[in-house]
Length: 291
Ligand code: GDP
Image 1: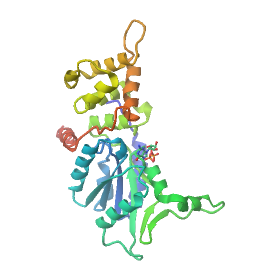
Image 2 (image 1 turned 60 degrees about the horizontal axis):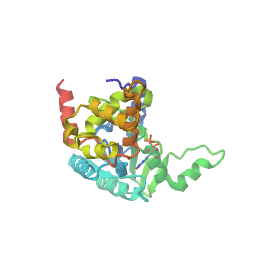
Image 3 (image 1 turned 180 degrees about the vertical axis):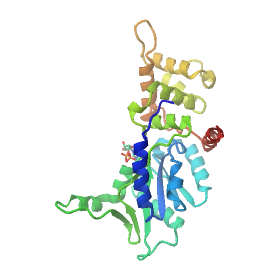
Image 4 (image 1 turned 90 degrees about the vertical axis):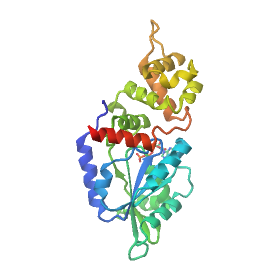
């Protein structure tokens, strides 16, 4: 497994969340709807203790609609947890967020006992985008006032609800190898922390079963019916060949082929895709825990 993450980062974020969590009623965990299992940090449950959890499957505009439904049902069945889908195109995300949070913590909704929220999530999942939308012009104005020390650390979503204005940055927690590859494919892991070919091969591996038709349509692959049974390397090589990533002597440039596959996944050229189902993810976790 070539994906590296550094323990120093973990300790800093763990400490920051531990300090903040004392004053929080509902933890909003932002997940990437394309990888709703792999983008969750299992340590968050440990760090947040008994607090209620709202799982937000963000970037749902990029994910497979049927699989998003399955993941929402999976997470909504967990105790003290609710799940909603969201994306940056939603004009007023606060409304649905608020409603779900109020349902999770009905005892906190008065001026004396305000509902206190915090957003957490791995890099690139959309925390800043969502915070900016939630903060709107009002909060931006506060920060812009020249010479004023920024003591306001909360965004008021309603008179009796506020959100801390700095999101909790979680590190990608890689218990399952497959989760590491999916995180890397999504862009949650810095480029120099993984080998692109290794990640592209695992991406092909996750796509060739449920999304074989998309690979065929995009790359004009031969023998469409055999795609799920073919080796990942062979498929990546064919993708490279179809895209002209061929070196002198006729060999495929696997680095270029990998970039093509990863870019086409990330920029939606392959359509809306979710890399894992709840059943698959649970099976990977169980297998990792059995070792
Ligand atoms: P952060 O690292 O968690 O703060 O993530 P950012 O808010 O910086 O977002 C990372 C990237 O994802 C940016 O390019 C955003 O424009 C993009 N992004 C955020 N939310 C969405 C969304 O709901 N849908 C899509 N398609 N892109 C999004």
